[in-house]
Length: 420
Image (cartoon, rainbow, N blue to C red; front, side, top):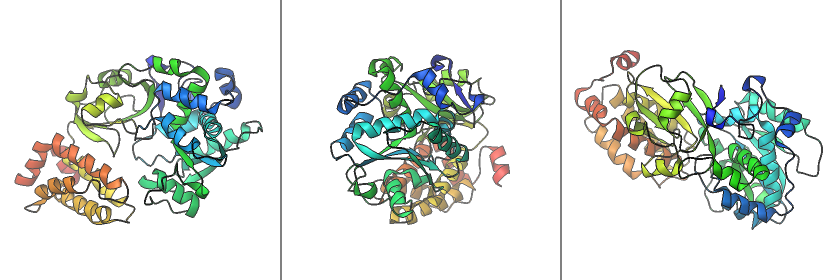
């Protein structure tokens, strides 16, 4: 894991501002000296209104307005609501949440404590992927380092490894039963969650941003952002780029600027995966000068999602890349509804045959048809995200899919040799 702040956002009061990243976790003393004390929530409703004015969107993938989410819990709370800081981060190539938890654990805790005061919660859980050992350690030390107070003392729960373990209903299910599978909703967590109480499940980056807004205000937050969405965001860059890892950017930074700030490309690239495995493929050229902004990406049929920017080298086959992701998504199914068990399984099998150059006569037609049939039919959104990515692959790599289906060969010799 590496983390770097872009030049535009390398100030002390950004999410990844502060001591050099090589120094490791920021101590409580350093954190308070840099940012000052966390404001008391003497008027919780007022702070939720501040969040509304700030335009802060959730950073966990769905991009739901944070103020609205907090209000939905606060309106049902009798003082015994639960706040869960979600750091499960089961997305295979994303590292932004674990980087934040390792480097700035006190900012995450501040956000969770502030949320508890605002929504009326007396219990704060920090839910961390068990594979993220450095994050588990950093947060445990940070909690022990903080002075005793009347705030709820957070406690760390290690989430099981799995893509769906961070889904909101799966989080509640695990905290209740030790089974991290999504459940049928309603009721939704904000209505009835942990111990039957209204429960706020918020991504750790969202909470860190809220903690900064609590200190600096909504106008300060809105000054960052160069397109339609205010603020900064953490992104994870992978692929043929010199400076891979986690970076903080202003919303609206272009793909070209992000790559330049990361030191440039190390090889040619024709395609890029935006937003993670629930995101979508785009031709690199089509997105090169486009703003990385949730609203602008949505206009292109893409999502900012978890902030993942994964470049595919030009000598790699997009059919194979899509096949590997779909095979992973089928394997990560909660296995509790037909669209996941049978739908994703069938898609993964057909896609692998097409990628390997041994397709059945109708495999490509079946993939196109199934991609349009499965969305909205699952017990959770896992199959929706999977087929959304498949549809983007069928579109961006259309010529390569046809080549594989019709001629049983791949136009990328290096990929064919690796998988042959």
